[in-house]
Structure formats: C-alpha cells, structure tokens
Image (cartoon, rainbow, N blue to C red):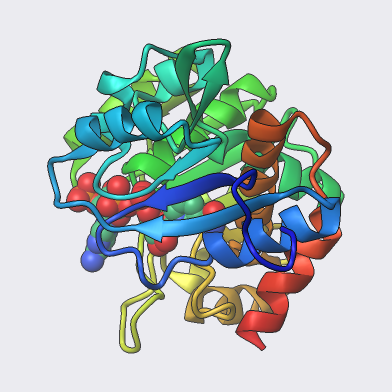
Length: 276
Ligand code: NAP
C-alpha cells in the first residue's frame, strides 16, 4: 500500500461475523506493502445471512478481492458467478476474485495446508496415512487436499459421525470414517476442530496415542502453542501450528487477486510479530 490511499488505490476486504480478531488485514496489508502494490485491505462485518449482498457489494464497488470467513463461506459459494474446482469440491469459498467480468469463488485453505507442510516443514503428504479430527469447513478442505495430493488414506474422526461421513465422501475411496485408535498407525494427524483455542479445552485426541513417528498439525493458530502441540512434542512427534496454513492460504488468495507472486516471508513476519 502507498503511504495513504488515493483515488487510484484498489480495495480488498475480508467479510466475517465476528471479524475484529482477524489477522487477514495484517497479512494482506504487509503483502501489498512488500510487493509495492497500491492496494489496501480492510475488514467488514455484515449481518449473518447477508453473504449474497456482500458479493453484490463487491461487484458494485469493484473491490479487487474478497476474503470470506464464518459464517459466509457457504452463502458466498452460492452467490458468485462460478466456483473453482477446489471450492466446488469443498462446497465453500474462502476468497473471491475476478475473471474478466465474472466473480469466481475459490478455496485456498486445502492447498495452503499442503503447501505449508511441503514448504515450511519439508513434509510431503504423498503416500501418507492421515487422520483428520473434525468435519467442518477447515477439515473438509484438508481432507479434499490430502486426497488430491496423493495421501494413501484419510481417516476422519468427528463427534458427529454423520458429518464425518459427509467429509470423507468428498475425497472418494481414499477417505473413510475413522476411530481414535487409527491415530496410532497414522503418519500425519490434523486437528481441525477449535479445541485448543480456549483455556481448559479438552484435547481433541488422547495424547497416549501419539509417538515419535507422528507429524501433528493443529490448525489452531491462536494461541500459537496449544495443549495438543505440547503433548505431541512430549511424545517426540513433530508439532506444527496453523500459522503456516494461514500464511499460505492468504498467499494463494493474494496471487489470485493481483497476479503477483506472494511475498510469503513478509506475510509470515507480519503475523509472527503480531503474535509475539
Ligand atoms: P467449523 O466449520 O465450525 O467446524 C468445527 C468442527 O470441530 C466440527 O467438526 C465440530 O464437530 C468440531 N468441534 C467443535 N467443537 C468441538 C468440541 N467441543 N469437541 C469436539 N469437536 C468439536 O470450524 P472450521 O471453520 O472448520 O474451523 C476449525 C478450526 O480450524 C478453528 O480453530 C479455526 O480457527 C481453524 N482454521 C484454521 C485455518 C488456518 O489457516 N490455520 C483455516 C481455517 C480454520 P461437529 O461436526 O460434531 O459439530
């Protein structure tokens, strides 16, 4: 972003409710500054249920890009002109951009997850036996991305088994509903529930099931160190929080909107500094 917005500044935004806690303005304004783009990124909190109106506003105001978080991911998927293959597979949109005059819904969460593991941790999910705990929007994105990246198997654990079955069905024969003991034989274990965000939350899995061969990823990034990650380290496992996925999914959105390679180091530094 230039020092102050001008009449020529492009505007991008996140919509969510609540949205005040969002790290997306920090991430994207750092990215625009590092890339030398005359763009600015702000946050809007529309009333729940007004996702379609937000898409109409993006069109009317010619916003350069839109990030979408809860509770608007499904509503926006239904309101854009078309969805990308990734957004269609998951049934949810986490960002919207332009293809000519058409508004396209995209979902970068799953690809951001896989890229963060590969780039930041040197972990390839190809051939990996995976357990995903949770069956909400983030879990579905991760399940679809793991299958797409060649995971050998994906077991979905969720307190609501019907939702676990729905999430697994998105990834075809590679994925199925699992049971807690499946953690023992897994290479990669992912927490895609909010457990760990609040003090006193129970662990999403029994830590006795973890050992030194596991890579444990907690999609929670606030706080950056969760009780699950502490338990994983205690068991000798590799422990990874959700900040890498957050940065990479935002980087993919940045490139979708601007056509410019995302300055990932600047984005990572911005959120690491904010959390320090
Ligand atoms: P969501 O759609 O609301 O789904 C939440 C899932 O967690 C559901 O499967 C739910 O189970 C389960 N769950 C919730 N509370 C639980 C509890 N007390 N015990 C057991 N299971 C519980 O949420 P989401 O959007 O997928 O987000 C999940 C987490 O991922 C959040 O912490 C979010 O911040 C994080 N996230 C991180 C990134 C990143 O970039 N790092 C991106 C997206 C999300 P039921 O189906 O039984 O209700």
